[in-house]
Amino acid sequence: MIGEDEGDVNKAYIEFKDAIIKFDNIELLPIKKAISRINPNNVNQNEESVKRLDYLVDYYQSGLSMQIEAIFRGYGYLEIIDFQNATDLYDKIKN
Image 1 (tube, one colour):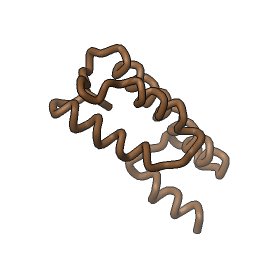
Image 2 (tube, helix red, strand yellow; image 1 turned 90 degrees about the horizontal axis):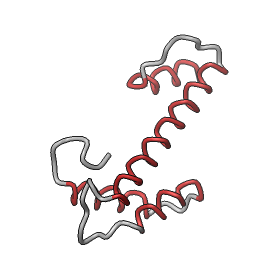
Image 3 (cartoon, one colour; image 1 turned 60 degrees about the horizontal axis):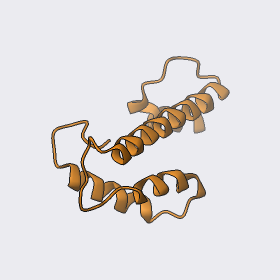
Image 4 (cartoon, one colour; image 1 turned 30 degrees about the vertical axis):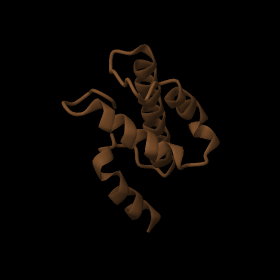
């Protein structure tokens, strides 16, 4: 998430924060709490609070990937899923 690619860490933080804060979803509460622990005036990818947010987001992404794969398997699609094409697969299964 933050600092994985070359770029502006502050800009990445602001964009991520703005995207998450607008949602009123109880499942995002841990991420919102992690964001609130970061000093917006000193976003540094080596800062412990930034690292913790990054780890948390990685876990969320892994969990979501597993949920998506479970849905496909529940519909009988047992192949390894290329998540770039997951939307196309979903549309085929739905129809």
